[in-house]
Image (tube, rainbow, N blue to C red; front, top):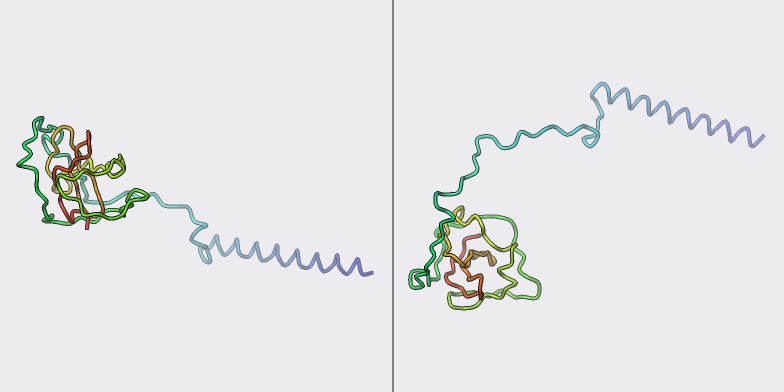
Length: 157
């Protein structure tokens, strides 16, 4: 007898659950009660009215000779740009770099190079030099030995 009572209760519970699921499905089809994660994502057309700036004319025509006197300066940037977060190389502390110092190789690894320097108002680097991001600053560094040719402070606010 106890077995039949258990089976009867299980059947009643199963019917309630199935009925509830069917009711929820009908509600979903009518447009109510739908959870946001259950909907299909919409196609996003992207930003409107935005044109990515093209590289300026002669952006890759790097001067072959370096007039060190023209570059050896520590400037405060005229404008600051907000871009993603900066993560300095592991094991290194903050340091205020100036021209003439040697930037350790870890700071001018590939992920720190500012390839689109013209977007941030930086000059065309001479051959053998690259702009790198070091915290909020842009540093013009020799790719041969890491010597800093110029520093532009506060470019990346």
